[in-house]
Length: 324
Image (cartoon, rainbow, N blue to C red):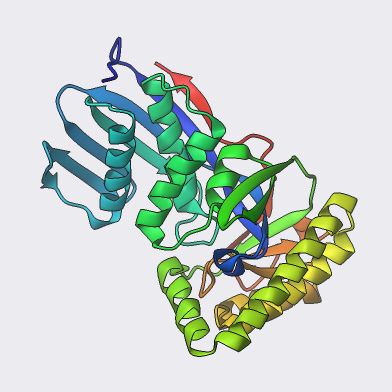
């Protein structure tokens, strides 16, 4: 059993993600390529006497004591369930209070849930002095992700934990995240203003893949080839090739049925304004478009988007911000 030596508060933060290549296909054995974006989520963790869990965020408040829910909140319940698994895994019997805030647009395809979950996991790690490794943190965030989304990849967790560029590969049917280090890439992100229904999009692709296995298996294989070439382009800093591959990947994602009119409007306008590449980021059906452009500050002007901004790549992953 782990005890806390003194009552204190720890604040941790984690970056979000831009999915460069390989979303959806990564759930079926394809590699994937993503970047950590310096829009961060924050979690302040505080120990409580007794087995009480309190979570507060912009989504409201959740509270339970001794397993009895006192203040229900469906939006925060999944975070509470993930937190309880984390506490049980490390034999922590203290209660916990979490205050969460996030600069990551919810439902944007920027892995806001992974960013929040990584910040929570790191704040718990710091509060109870668990000395969790990066791999421990990725596995902890992955627990939250599976609770929230059902079928999930480790792309968002790895972006949140490592920072920089992330490569996802499969070894003996197990997903592995590899840090490729910091990369200087001129990106912008444009959000449709419509939420990306991650679970529904994943289930839709799964359903179509079961109905048309030969067709959808070929699409997944084609995406895998694009991702492999994309890593080579990234490592050579060949932005034109990378942009072209992003456009091809978008076409394949359209064929998977996960694009939308709001996404297509943004990406075609971005291409008209000189984007080297533009594609949806994440589950699709809404959310955001990631844009590769030599002048991100110019391309975001007058896009048909709810919000658009130049995206700064995060050098750092999850980190402790403050100890009190």
